[in-house]
Length: 334
Image (cartoon, rainbow, N blue to C red; front, side):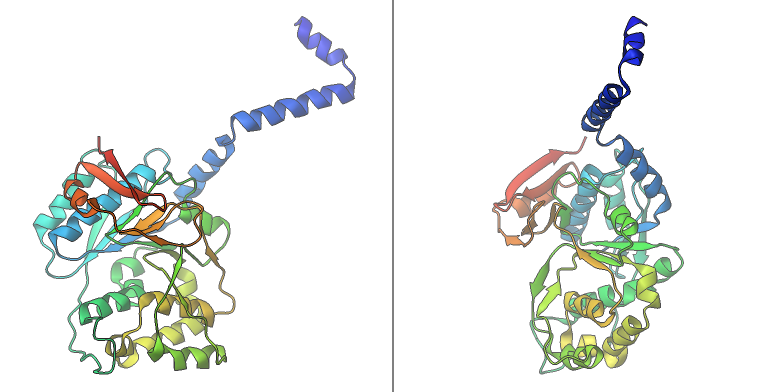
């Protein structure tokens, strides 16, 4: 009581200075209190879905388990909440594969919502003899899926999601994430975020893109879209995006001639002059041997001995590559 009286007797200026110091100390010691509650409220209101396309192989099943474990381990969650997972697969995916994924990832967290969705990849399209033969029809169908098919799958259309995230089976978050990409894209009112870029030819798409953007010189880098987050309403309601994508899909151009989905994504971001897009570099992410540590703007390829074999333990162990040197990190799933 005596101390309180003394403070009240101090000059107003000095008392104000003391209060300012106390506020600064509070912010320094508890920097995440406000952001925690803000993120908790936002996370409940953002309707996001994490999607992947799995191959019907035992290898892909193991990789998918590892990828989901990386999200459970490193994604910023509140009260155990994680966004729903939607795993797309073809007709060769078996009930045993499904059960293996569920038993491994739900063994310590049965709150996860994981759904499986069939995709019809049957086609009679003949690959052009002048196109890139190193890209088989299965790979081209995957590119069409991430360019068009996924956005019109019934589970996406009727899921009433605001945002969609892609994580491939061999993708993983390699360390703790400081912020939720869904909340980030929503709070900044962005339409699309991505992690890195790469380069490959997209000759069959060039005439279409030049006509849409009225330019003769095109940028050559493509979105490394093995990870991206997209605002679905923008994709559906942008007339220029819809017109452009239709030209890639009509007459099966994307299958016959081969157009990479990363290049297709880069193009749709160019044709809409009003799109709000951002490349993020503070997310620790890896895609097989392609490493993108936190703060690393580019991408480093490191083929690390033993990494592939570690995937056989993915039911009980998360394995990621860290740093640009590709250091193997093993984390026991408890």
